[in-house]
Image 1 (tube, rainbow, N blue to C red):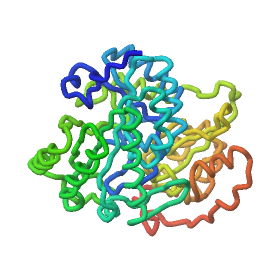
Image 2 (cartoon, helix red, strand yellow):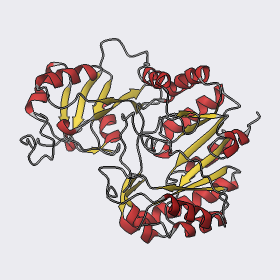
Image 3 (cartoon, one colour):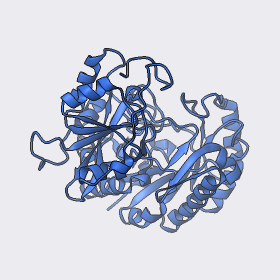
Image 4 (cartoon, rainbow, N blue to C red):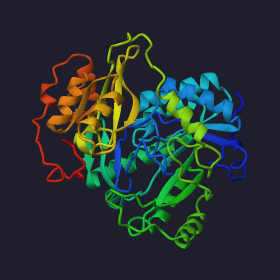
Length: 427
């Protein structure tokens, strides 16, 4: 096997106009909540991390890659960069890497992660010859980190404030050191957030250089609505250049980053073509398990704000994540992300939604009005008001366990009142 690592367009400025990359969006769940991040899975008009039009299973991702290679033969790198974190979805991430390595033995493999749960997978990453890993490290001082992260979830436990930041920083730095011991090229992304960590980035550079990092990408913070940091202004180009010059004392700089989507494909800096977006949508509808009889509803849909917990009113949801049971691994797996009909329209809206979720036996939400519950039930979809970690609840429902402990009462709200909705007609 001959891996031409110099062809990686993110790590080699000279390669970025000649070689393309493809991000396979197989990792929807995230294990941290950053105060600058708002994942909009189905938005096709934004070019930033955490955004994808579809979520794929590993087998769907391989099919999509096959189509992409036929259309864009200059692709030299297959990466996984979300839309959540690859190692909050370790089974899907590692299976995808195995499938790609088996079929495309000379393809460069690349991962972008926050590093929290990277450590357990590094040995297998090395075995699969994953040549490049990027860790986003925004702080090495937990006091500063505590201002950047709302929570960290590790081993099914949530951490907050200084405790969360301390845990994250320690695991990031340990993972970076182990990557270098394994001979893997390591890039560190540091997001410049004015008034939060902009002065601190130099200390980040000094620390990660001491652990063997190969290159640093000082990325300007991207202002995103509906986040804690939405009112923080983006850093000026002059500030970014000053920080890049200062940190260049410790590490080579990546200055051509395009802040790519989790489903980015093609040459860096170019938007995804309509052709590739159609291929992505087509791949997302390939059946994962042909053994499921026609007419059986094998899936469960979930409303969620963070991809981790059930926690959104039906009328406020703009997308649903769809899960099913993988018969080989006996695990519940994410198979799709589907856009909801636009607000308004009364009963017609819920009839349209019933068609969108026609392969789902249930829809899990935190609350819902009588009208959508009734319409969806008429169409064979049971609306369940629940709370809890998505994978735990979905697995329990799909395997017939008693999930009454996760059930909620229904706090019916008038539209536009205390539910915080838009008045568009949730009930």
